[in-house]
Amino acid sequence: MNILILGSGGREHAFAWKIKQSALCDKLFIAPGNAGTIQCGTNLNISVTDFDAIKNAVLEHNISMVLVGPEDPLVKGVFDFFAADDTIKHVQVIGPSKKSAQLEGSKAFAKTFMQKNNIPTAAYKEFNKDNYAEGVEYIKQHSLPIVLKADGLAAGKGVLICQNHEDALAEFELMIQQSKFGAASEKVVIESYLNGIEISVFVLTDGKDYVILPEAKDYKRIGEGDTGLNTGGMGAVSPIPFFDEALKEKIVTRIIEPTINGFKNDEMIYHGFIFLGLMIDNGNPYMIEYNCRMGDPETEVVIPRIKSDFVAILKAVGEGKLGAISLETDERTAATTIMVSGGYPGSYETGKKISGLTEATHENGIIFHSGTKMNQEEVVTNGGRVLAITSYGNSIQNATKNAQQQLNKITFEGAYFRKDIGYEFE
Ligand code: AMP
Ligand code: GLY
Image (cartoon, rainbow, N blue to C red; front, side, top):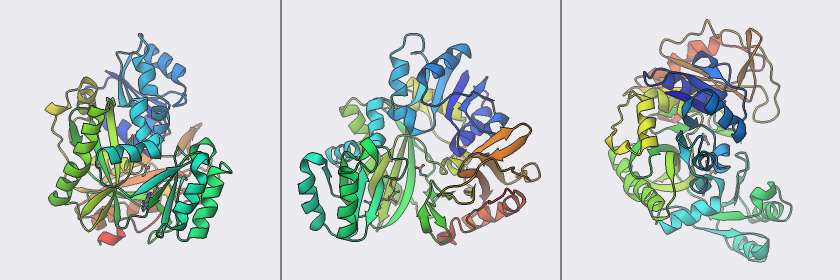
């Protein structure tokens, strides 16, 4: 079958790398892709939210599966767009319907869903202009820290953790009255702060059955020792040493099964990845958030740990036959370190020539591209997160050590990376 991947990051390069290895894949296309995905298939210069152009490409290249990487097209309804069009409704779109993607697209929708299905999560209330005064009173009596969340998508910036009431009140005013995040903060969820260790658990479902993919831990802060500004993710590791059978069992019974049952009860069509952002406190899991896609950089460690034919699994999702699939995983540890542009997550320059990529061929891992593009014959930077250097090892420490050579060989002006990914497990 011919397959199209939507997206252009490290996550999509990891998908492309894995899919290319399947005998079930004839031709692979990536839209828009990056300089790395060119090694796996054909890049198409199409935006992930230009549904008409995507449809034309699907018809032109006889594509029968579309794997959606980022949340934007899902929240905008790419699944429903395909289902409603006779010429493309036979195509398997791997991702949730527009309604189900609201689990990521609207924090209020997600919290209502969690509450309705008795899924453990932080206590919360939602506010808008109409009950603004009530929100002010709610904040004043709330314990600290207070978590404020813009309801809609805000490019990863819509969550604010406030350490005192004054800051919380000021942010609340900015979000609701001054439209700090535009329409995304017309509604605000105010919730209690959860203590614990944050992990990412990934579930692939056809709406009835599910498989649990390898779990991962993401390192979001720019600085070593988890300091400084939040980023899209500076590295990730899988598996997580404390993720034992007892914890997994709690996650299955308290979170995954109620979630899948919730889909059935509310007729939510879901043929894709569920990303559970969980806080583990004293061995108990609490939902922080749902995402309706895989994580980035988590995918760059999760995919390398899947041994099974990935296209066979995705095909089973599209056909509603996931119940017949069992997942084979690689026992090794995988760690990824992200090389970023100087200045990221603030402003940064792009177009910097990347040297050493050929020399840095990776025996113990894979070099995934995140923000890169071709400039004639050269690979140049094209984003904040530039490369994901993934390595295998028999421990987290050993896996990150195996990437050192690559991290030292690859250079571009302003390049920065954290040297301590997985540090707390050493
Ligand atoms: P999001 O933008 O929804 O991915 O949330 C950003 C981050 O905020 C999460 O990954 C958590 O680290 C943190 N966060 C969100 N909600 C809470 C909460 N209730 N308690 C503690 N941390 C939270
Ligand atoms: N790594 C977190 C995310 O993809 O949202």
